[in-house]
Image (tube, rainbow, N blue to C red; front, side):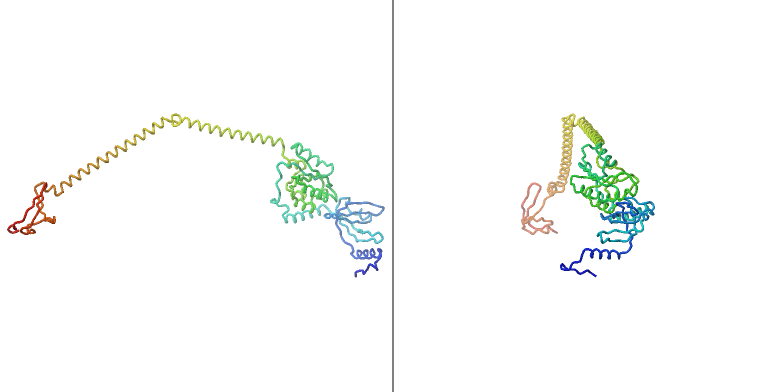
Length: 405
């Protein structure tokens, strides 16, 4: 039932704290999981600060020394535990704590099983897909580096990168790489470098360690932060056999911090050697092409048409004159054949023409209308006729028909 208060009728602080304590007391005992961020002993009592493994929140846990010592192995700062505790609220101090009666260390097997479940879930979302990984720049001017404070990983990356490409510059973010605050600090550094437009690639580096030491680099929030980065990310966590989830979501996985430096920047000596090699290949290719063209030009110049152009002209002229003569002879022969044909045809025509017949002594009798008289019976007495000979003609008048005509 809500507490009814007004400005004129407020309740004292003790009443509010008492009611909060009563409400919390009704929660009963619960199992709580977290990571030990602080641990201190005072007499027979142990005070723990239990941090949430994902969110940046913590809670105070109080238990007897015997309860903590009964846990095997005895938990230390950074260990993951589950506690069976009752939420309690101290109304006198206004403070909240968990009164633990059992503390259980989370074993490696259980941690690995949880990581495998998380890996499966994130893979199903596509965060580890090859197609979403970005290509590294060939020659970055500025490289971001997230590493431990004064760590060997930082020295390895900086030294090897400087040896490979002395002109490269680094933006270094030193963070905690182990313990309850590691994941949050790495995420903050990652966001800062990703927001820097001069940074072209980011390296997250840490040396080797136990599974518990590398747990921050399998944090779900860190994995999602890397997946959301605009800048390509190289993961260089632990050794070759260590595979935190950060390795799977990063654009490139390096086996060591030294390998990360090798992948981030090219080797100036190798690049100069490559330039020399390519220049030599280009020189040989160009020289070969020039030699082939020179040989071709030399062979062209030695051909008769190029060596003596007038000789080729004379040859072509001779060929043209020969063809013209052949054409003239062919036309002349054709004309002669056609002339003979005309002569023969004329002779045939003369032999078959009426004039030829007339020259042999025959004559043609015609009427005035030039029709030919074929028989004497066709002529009437007194009819005027024309008798045509080979060279002239004669006009006559028919006297009478011949007997029997």
